[in-house]
Image 1 (cartoon, rainbow over the protein chains, first blue to last red):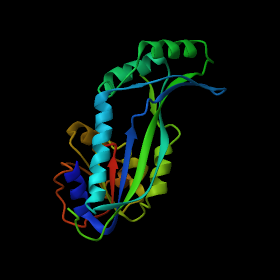
Image 2: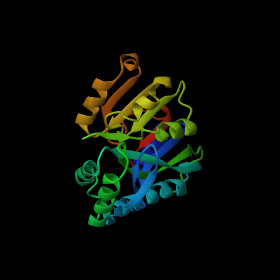
Image 3: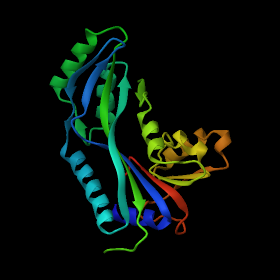
Length: 145
Length: 98
C-alpha cells in the first residue's frame, strides 16, 4: 500500500490533495431506529483480520507522511449508517459481506431481534459504521527515504 | 433484502467539506460500482475511477448518467502501478481502499 501512495503522489499536481476515506473498526453499535426513538441494542465484535487491516492502513499512511510525500491537513470521524428492514436481513448481510473482519455474537442477535420485535411498526435496524476522512496535501519537497 | 447505505448522506457532506471538486481532474481509487463517484463527479472537469473488479466497473459504466459520459471514465488498474503520466490529477480519492 505504501507503493500505491507513492504512485498517487506521482500523478498528483504539485498542490494536489489526497482524500482518504475509510471505515475504522471500533465495535460498531447496532441500533433499532423508529421515528420515535433510537435504541442501541449491542455492539459488533471486531475480528483480528479486520483490526490488522486497519493497522496496516495506518502504518502505510504514516510511512508516506514520514517519507515526506504527504502532509496531514485535517481529519475527523463521522457516522455512516447501513440500515435494514429487519434484524434477519442485517445478520444475512454481515454473514455474507463482512464475515472476514467482524462478527455478530448470538447475544447481540437476540437482543436486537427482541428490541426490534417489541418496537414501533416503523422500526428498522442499522449499524453505525465509524468512518475516517483525512485530507492530505502533497508535499512539494522530495523524498525523505 | 432491502439495504440502505448512508441515508443521511454524511459521506457526501464530508467529502464536499474536504474537497472542492468544481473544475478539477479527479482520480478515484477503488471506485467499485461508482456509488461514491456519483456524489461528486458532475462538478469535476474529469473523473477517472479505477478498480480491480471488472464486474463492478461494468456496473459503474452502465449506471453512468448520460450527462457524464464525456467526463467520467472507469478503468481496471492497479493502484500500485497507475497508468498515468505524472501530475495528471488535482485530487485523488482513496475510497474505502487503503
